Image 1 (spheres, rainbow, N blue to C red):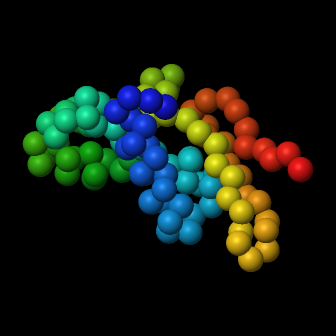
Image 2 (spheres, helix red, strand yellow):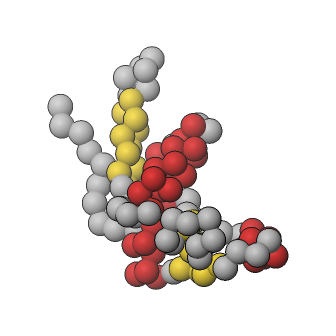
Length: 106
């Protein structure tokens, strides 16, 4: 992940994690990207975002583009490992948009 998507992707995943959703589910969720990083830029929406949300964005004047397949690389990729502060248990997730894994070394 880089360019305009990096801060957008980090924020999207962080906000989902902050709601208590596990790392794998957070990474599995569909993402969006304002492609050129400007307020009037085309909004790329990953397949899986509800049609109602897409229609609402269009109704509000945004240019919307649906992204699927290999082109989903636009939305970045990552791995997450969280440590429970009380138990010390580690929970991980790996982005389905690319190969990779989340692992720790003892």
